[in-house]
Length: 495
Image 1 (cartoon, rainbow, N blue to C red):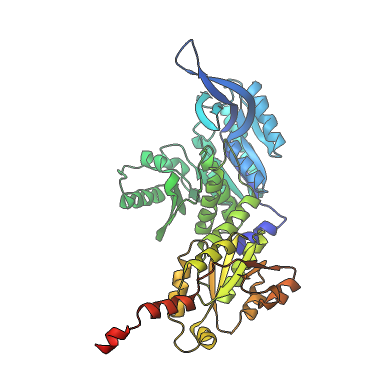
Image 2 (image 1 turned 90 degrees about the horizontal axis):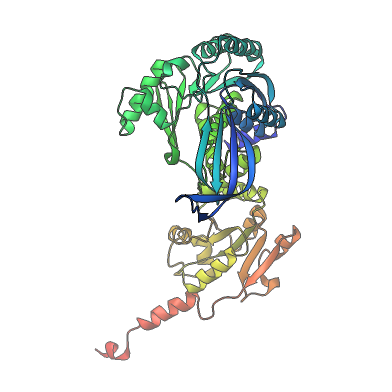
């Protein structure tokens, strides 16, 4: 997956996408609340700044531009000051605006959010949901028919503000079918039959609940609801977003795929749905399958909810998250070839790799302190672990006390160790040449020129670090103490 995305990431050509839907001006009033009004028991917002952002279908377009796509936006705005501000903001994002028309009888839809101490405390909406005129509807359809054949795909972003009428949606589906272009819909209407013949529909759970004659109380009910909607819309897939519970992809005659959210911290969910449909659509339009596209869009949503306000996700952020995801989900105990890939991935994101090695036959306090200090020197700690055969050759008959599997499992339970790999040689020289750590660590019971691998790492610009070891702790000393404490006394021999 990462390699396929990387290949797309490195391409210069980006898809051309037609976005049709309701255009919204998002206004933000930023400030702080430090006192209560003497006029009424309400907080007083001391304003610090005001910002404008794109909302609705315009935010979908904005997300896609941030991902490097060529975007043609189709919708309508009011003949008013807010409309002027919205159109200018769209222009500033390098979004094509020939398909944006002006209402005469309706104002521009706007949402003002009051933000205090990075938290949304109030939202003020201004909108008029009267049906658009036949004249506006005709202009939209003419533009869609003109532009759609030259696009790589179409996104319908329905916020139920009147743009995606039955006639407009029908025109999109008809033209897309003829031109063999995919159409992806983010729905708001509870009547999903409006979106018949869409390639994929991306509702959230609440929208699904409103649209089906099925009470959804468990996974089985959700599966039945998805099957109902697939049959109703004749879509190839339905991607249901479920907030903190991630998302589920349903396809005809295919087992549903559940994807858990990856969000580390949630600040604001504003526009997260726009990010999902943007990244999902982009991935589908460039050739990813629905499962891969859903996985990428879930990742993008996890990034955007960590930002405040209507935000977008960039290709760089997704790429970085992909690297982090691979590092995070890798097993602790790895074969050398797999470890080399992970280390290469880590270094490509400027992670500092620390390496140390040992037998670690019986873990004691000295080991723990040493490994903690080793990890503190970089981002990733790799431990080279002697195999049983290697330990036997080094320590003699009777060693190791614990076999290599036990020793590896014990080390993997230590949270400060990232990866472990076994080596069968007497020294880790070969392993060091393979993974090329940034820092080679040993205890200060060695001298620098005695450290195996020093010349190797210094040869490519890395260095060796000696860490003070805890005196009086070693596996040999531990074994001697055990034997001494359990050696039969002279009295017991006589008896």
